[in-house]
Image (cartoon, rainbow, N blue to C red):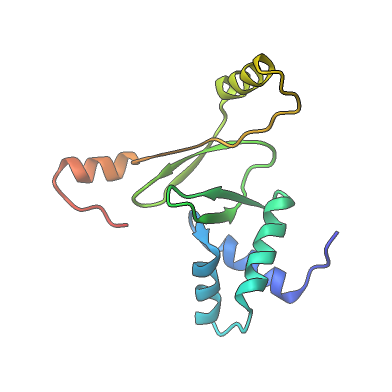
Length: 137
């Protein structure tokens, strides 16, 4: 177990105070705006450790960037993520679990793992776009 340094605690607190997913660079910038001297490499390491310990969710954006958020659900789960505003909903997906196991077994794979994140537009952003308004990102 890694020791809990002030840097790791600062990253954890900043992540807890952030709504939705955030990149390491953006979190680093937010920490610096509060006067923290923490380095970018330290933010990356702390986020990776938090994700590995199940204290943070990690996903790859459609652009390929790693994004993180404080995890509110323990155990394996999936997300619905608004491409516009970043609203994130944790979901159970029993059908996905069964499908992943079946497809892996059909191809001779064992101990298969998967990540499923569904990107779309939330109801509010869809409503704003339908009304001809530009939703806030």
